[in-house]
Image (cartoon, rainbow, N blue to C red):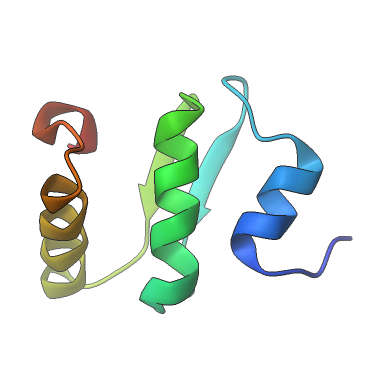
Length: 73
């Protein structure tokens, strides 16, 4: 078991293209960095447990940081 901040823990385990990522903390300071790292490392699948409002807010945030809208969806 690894207990750490999202970005630090994902770095320690070596997140890569064979991994799946599920963001479910409901806290942007934890979930957004994890989602960004997952996208940069081309993980196999990214899931997010959230309300539509939160999902849409995160999508807008990622788009504002130049992530491709097609990749986000």
